[in-house]
Length: 286
Image 1 (spheres, rainbow, N blue to C red):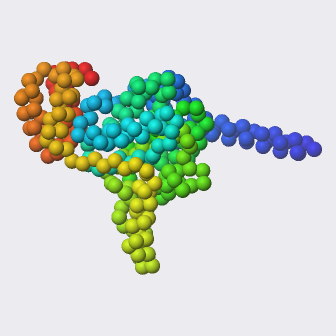
Image 2 (tube, helix red, strand yellow):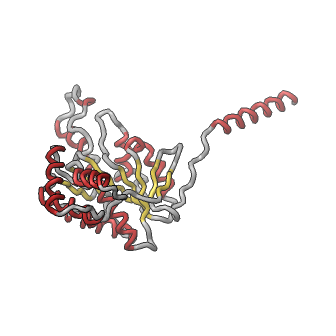
């Protein structure tokens, strides 16, 4: 009998030691005080963000069609109706992620009593997306789960977890969560998989089907294309007016042209970088 008592005490001691060594459970986010959060994986959970780095929707120029479609999709979801997971793909620096944040900000101003919560999941945490959704599905709020610059390497299997969540899995995406992603690549996966190169029984159709199988699960695709000169000018003017930059129009645009020529690119991102240069030069606070 004493031996059994000693064994029980030893097991209890070991269990208590293991409990002390294990990481604490992730803190539950308070979405009443914040309208956005970052998901850091199952070990750290959510970090709420009180101020989202977003620009006003009206400042996003040259993407009127994409803006309208994302607004309509988001509004339907916010009202409790069905909506599509959305892939924003295309040219770099043309406002893909800015549009998501701007639409989120706009919709919350339009409907303060029924706020949307924006959750950013890092590309490196996609394989924990099911754990993230397990937390969100029990909540009363409605969420936009957002991944910026999403793409996968041929050997990366995390995309399979995302495929099951978007469409096709037994559980799937909770009704109170919508998934938005941005990418420079239309199909998120490379055209050819290195693991297939030596498999002669797979033909090109098989490889193509696997390549597009993830992007096909997004119900709404929004393409972003290279910036026109007129759109670039209008972006610069909009920002300059908003921040009250003390330059006459001709000087502002002449310098903006020199800036984009030096960069060898013209996009919304380049316009914003030029404006940041002027804000520093004229000591204007954001």
